[in-house]
Image (tube, rainbow, N blue to C red; front, side, top):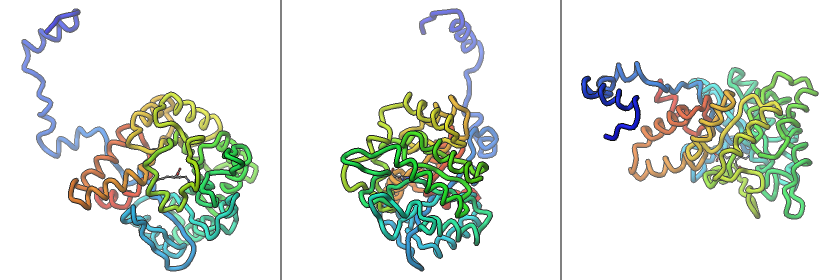
Length: 338
Ligand code: PBG
């Protein structure tokens, strides 16, 4: 060992004259392991995503996401009662509308699919915290998150529609709205319209650092929101960037976001940590569809221990700094935690 300065000389003397550190002492029993455990998952960490579709008694499994369903309003209400009884505190709703058009009209229709679902859930399961995803991509015929003109996904007109959508969700009874579009100025537009209508107490959880990710593939089957042409790289972030995530998060906080989200979770644990350390805000992470499907697929093949890997992933996301985790594993995880 090369001795380069005084402190390392002291270290050397210490290790020569004292027994070496036995880190394993604290790992010998489960009791002691639990006593020194630094990160503990709790049921209160989870937000469970749900997909609501038209019809009655519809419960259709998403082929790339075993255990995840498109459900009609009546089925969603039943599901929500179960979610609540398991102890999961919150759900986030995505809508699959009856009709799609160029401007995503059903996204901001007072009688749209999500608005009806929110109303029904808050009536039947009032204690469940209901969050709505605010975006146009499930509602537009082209599958883009806003208005398309030529080959531009237009920002400023789109955020007005997003704000209208958020307002109708809250009027229907949503407890919190979560804009997932990644357009500029949407948090401000939503905060403004909510405040103007007296909903100054309704929080906004912004998808603040959302990356243009291949991990959304299965979700787009679930939400029927695959873009018909082009991609989302003109508004979602480049996976190579980290400083930019901090700029995005800062802007959303300045515009009034109450909770900031990083999405996806697993390839972006460093971003979660930087965001948490930099802003000290309640921070959410979205453990997205592709992250779920990979575990399910490998589990089905017998290549991994599905439950163990699930808990390890969720713990890792929390350890990275997430206070809240949006995950399709929420129900399974709370069952294991009980
Ligand atoms: C957009 C939205 C997406 C997801 C949540 N909100 C998809 C996208 O940006 O294409 C993805 C969630 C997941 O993959 O689980 N409304």
